[in-house]
Length: 190
Image 1: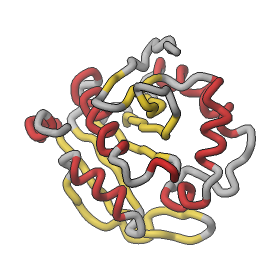
Image 2: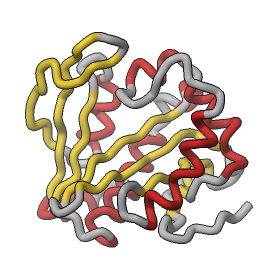
Image 3: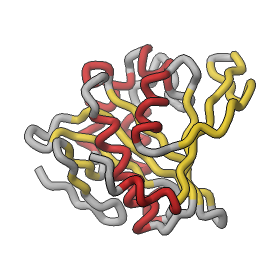
């Protein structure tokens, strides 16, 4: 199935097709994000996940990209079109930087899919968007996500103590970043 890309281009990797979200993805997004394990690792994902939130979020993606506020791709298997998760770049106006976020459904953890999708999003950010810096934060309890960033050439810049409030609790975040000048390393990534 082909999807109209508009401001969000389709991108392919060895095993994946990153494409714009469509309304037909809402049921799969809801199912994948209804996992307490996924919500525990993501600042912006509530648990329990509200039934209508997936459809509302998907409907907002095209306008967000057209306005340059956020670029979100559905991470799918290239050969079966199965939805695995998402990767998003959220630019900060006037700063030439963006926040990177990504998630995968629990059945797809540990298979290298995030490590394959993140470099594609970085190429878009540093290439198409001409960003200077892309940064990401992870909870200290999520070493697998930190490893994805390290594999993609991100550097750990520090610990943001009590920076995020999740479920009524203030939590630490680890800040990682890549600069455009680090881009030479990206060409050696899978």
